[in-house]
Image (cartoon, rainbow, N blue to C red):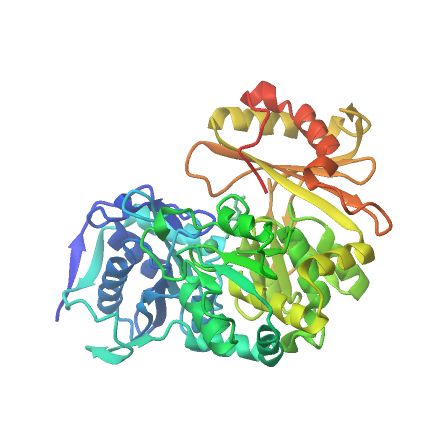
Length: 543
Ligand code: G6P
Ligand code: ZN
């Protein structure tokens, strides 16, 4: 086995986005493309010499090939220990846990999250740091600089490793451990939750449908829900990871998980429906006839977390991304703990979690998690819901109704306008941003603006400031509309309009959210001159 240095011409399109480098799979398969990006990561972290890394991915097309390449580059860069999920499988939260548990110097996660997979779809590479969380912005900027100046990469000519067999082997001085992707994660979940109570729930006839969407959570859900907690076989559907996710779009929301939604709204609905995304960090929760918005899910989990062993001593604080509804703020206020509003993107929770300021975090984009790892965690959310259901002996719908009767209801919906011409979307945002100071006092479609601003975040831990994080307009009567351009789209621009209206505890909580939010929608569309700018008046997606 020898290592060689291969000269290359640098690539100029390897700027990591919100969540690592995401490209069409064929781009990653181009000669030297993956190699160049991986070498740039090693360069950005000060080399691989003497270091340990976790490697795994969501099983999409090109996952195993990419792992073989990373192993050869890691060998040539002097890494001394690699921990790799069997068959190349690791969910994002499980990888985060392994990095923390084994104290490695970071990890490579191969995934494009909820984007479709396949040779003509998407692939991605994320690097997580030693705290288990996504590389912070300073590090991704360093990686990008490295990619632009890279002259060569180091690679070893060793044969491919056997990813199928659990056990430890040596490649020269480097130790390679192929580990069961589930067992350490299962052990962590056993520490956090009351597995006896959840097992008793299933033994008592509680029925659930978990849709793994042909993605990475299949093996985890089979092992935890069916084998360990005793849920009947068949509880987990689409539970074998496929390279192309069964040609589906592994995003757990009412649109892409429509089959599950239809089941949960039918006469034959089980007690709980849940789904997770490509790499297992997102979740959807739906009760019989009752969809739980991610914002409400965060609030309910925070309000009831004390029912799970890991959180009996209470929460340090709660954080949510700015466009997420204020429902969790109300819980924090009642608990007498701090709450934080951060920009969109899980990485902004990292400092608060590391500093012990918050225990639970969540985003409207279907992510919830806690300080047990440094990523959002789909199955964690499902297990916390199960723990709460087991302890409270109420249905999901009853828990929601009870929550609203206590805290009031934050009616919430996100309207997405996809693949807008970038110049048109930019013009809408620029015009709205310019006129923010003039909006208070003006009336649009019958609603008067009370306040309008652009969100900037001042990180209370490291003092850093992130500007241009979304436009916020508040209305008389307690409504809010937020305007933001997506940071994850691949085609043109996606405009997101987030609508929220608060109905106090004694108010009417039984309306359809779209009906309850119609006046706010009209005001938001009118004041942003949505149709004039984009020609659109109907969203492509409503969450
Ligand atoms: C990724 C990140 C999330 C974030 C989401 C926002 O999934 O992991 O933390 O909330 O992107 O996406 P957007 O398209 O709204 O920028
Ligand atoms: Zn994901």
